[in-house]
Length: 458
Ligand SMILES: Cc1ncc(COP(=O)(O)O)c(C=O)c1O
View 1 (tube, rainbow, N blue to C red):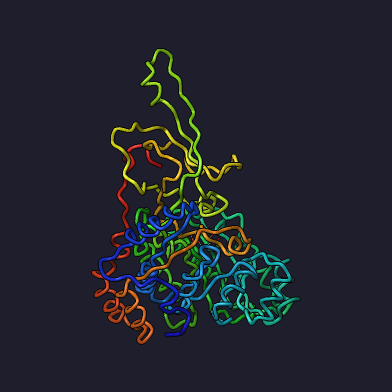
View 2 (cartoon, rainbow, N blue to C red; view 1 turned 180 degrees about the horizontal axis):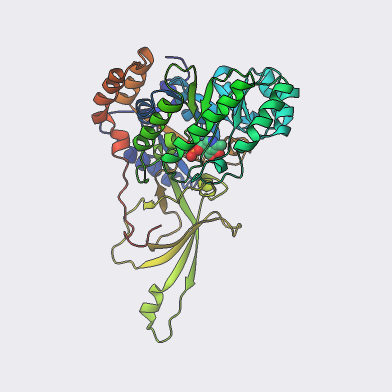
């Protein structure tokens, strides 16, 4: 083991003990303390399983986990233990990852827009790999970090059918000029980077992007750069309900790599899968702290009918400035589950979920059909691992939902086995995955009884 993760960092759960049991226990304790603070339960075994699946699907691609997707300690420790790299957007993220002991060579300062002070921080802390996509950024790097090794970011806009990116990448037309500028300023460009977005891309888009990257590699090589790194970004699905599962996207990527960057061509390939790794591992429990009833009067209706014709606004103990910040990152609001089974006679109402009172814009969900709920009731949201715990929120000092990490004994044994003998071949990967599949009780049984009507939920 590398020492990033040990048994003190998570709850070891035995065979047959489920995430649901853990959640129930924690809720039981909280009810006694009348604590209303939201909290997460995270299954580290689920993340390990995702890692094995990634290595199997994309054997040539090394993952660099984007810390902005989930900067929580257990996630960083586990991924560091498994040998992943980290894509950091700023000094705070670099510091967090290095604070856990990750060496600078495993860190990619991937944000194309960087403060000079943060570039200097990277320089003094040995982080050399970074990205740029315009002249201003190039000059900042040239002045502040002469030892940087940089990737030129190309935009999805030059790739037909990709989602236009407002935030990252230069056009194919500008690449030659930028590479010439880099040459003039003696900046070492070592590769190309792209990120195609996270909104359920057509897998074929990767082929176009890899082909475009190869054209730019040729231009750079012609100008005298020694190009050896291709970064294919993130956007891999975090749940199973997407149009194209990881394996389908990977088949397209592998074919494109074989065609444009065949094995042995001297180019290493990295990716920045964020939501893929963490979405399904995290479950969030949030309590109702206040409610407002809004009568929906119907002319001529009797009193009893009228009382069921109301809509309800529930204020939760966390909102879009906290654990639901994923809603700002293109994530659909996951379906809530109710901790307690509702009374069958109680009527159902049109309901909305809001964050803590005081911020009108803090809207989590509208138009849900829910049974009557009460202050103190708990709602449970699955698939909450991506963009719900960021490093900046960890640093603001605001109370953050606590995370309880758990891993089954079987998964922990598998992590140790992985460490002792990392899989090298297809057969190694198969043998690591197969005996585990029956033992992933944490992930497999992540289910709290759904009580909401199938129609009309989010
Ligand atoms: C530039 C960049 N790279 C990678 C990612 C990771 O995306 P995902 O979490 O969809 O894998 C993001 C997400 O915002 C991004 O903006």
